[in-house]
Amino acid sequence: MSNGEYIFIIYASFFVSIILFCLLINTILLKFSTTLGIRDNEKPIIRWSAVSKPSLGGISFYITFLIATGCYGIFFDSSNIFNDGQIIGVVGAISLAFLMGLADDAYNTKPRLKFLVQLLCGVILIFSSYYTNDEHSLTIQLFENDYLNYGLTILWVIAMMNSINMLDNMDGITTITCLSILFIALIFLGIKGSFDHFDFMMCLGISGALIGFLFYNWHPSKMFMGDSGSQFLGLIIAVIGIKYFWNLEDFNTGEKIPTKQIITVLIVFTLPIVDTTSVVINRIGRKSSPFVGGKDHTTHHLSYLGFNDSQIGFIFAGISFLSCLIAVSLYRFVHEWTWLNTTLYFLYFIAIFLSLYLTTQQHKDKRI
Image (tube, helix red, strand yellow):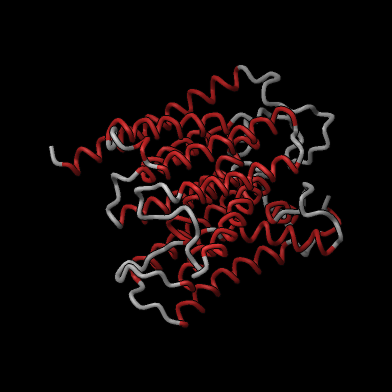
């Protein structure tokens, strides 16, 4: 058996097994969710769904992450996996994010505590970059000054963890969005032939977990991912964003081109960036806190225009698929990066932003 066939069999078996495992574990969790994972209804929580549902999806995500880490050690790197500072740092930061989210689901933790934990996750990633065998840093490499890169890294981690949490406001939306980002990372890794990399197994495993979860999270959903899921996913895609999009190397030359790095991030993360930016602008405009929940997201305004929840899910899936095609073409087929490339790709982002932002300027009376 060739090495390629061996890797294909491992990943195909792993992916299918994870999907089936997450379907099973979510089914079991639902059976025991009479009170577990359902917040106190007296708490001031604003959700799109009027029905209280178990917020347990994050548990299957985290278990899958641990399984993926163990399987990578078994099949690819049994001797060095726990000697790699970067992997240890990622496991530690992700575990911290998951536990904080789990505590928030159960006890509604203070926003200040959540912020401090998110800040600590960013700091862990920065320190773990010093002790790694990986060519990809866990800090954003955009400026010549390291401290500016560290500051941007922490800002990015906090922004993504909060953005994914905010985007989790309607059935299936966050699941679809994160699946798209992970698939793009898998394609980038595949193009480079990095099939034996830890990140490939991690992204594949979590993608399988999201597919298994989507069965219960698609409208009408039976389960939410909760803060344990959104904080976990927020940190995961923040890490993937740093390593493969912020620190993107040109496919042909291996050089980092700052404008190409920024454009790639804008395209891959179009939906989280657009939704969060629109919400922040609108809430500041009406002098309310951007950090207090409300039914004023782009998804909600699409509903006010007459789309049902399933149709909105398909709209976001369509935008995600288009962003995936554009990101892959940018990485693989654009051989010479010019100001014209920057302008054209940026116009795509602006078009999506304006299309969704302008929907939030209608039916303002329905905002909460």
